[in-house]
Length: 88
Image (cartoon, rainbow, N blue to C red; front, side, top):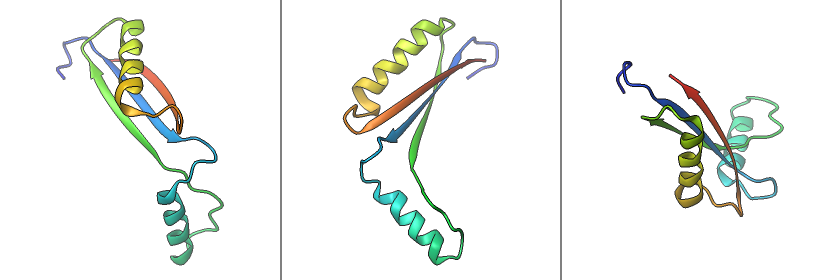
């Protein structure tokens, strides 16, 4: 996005809730041990989505981010979500 166009960067971090099986994290933890890296007591995975919104209104940008989370990016039954905004 052009530096002259005001925009807001939204970072959405989606993680599995505690108690939900994270097979990828378990595999990484096991592999780290096999490689002699550690001891590693826990591994968690997360997906991070970065949205660049051509918007100056932080409230509206957060509402759009929450809509993206609710409609596409996360399942509230198994995921916890953190949304952060920064103006560029």
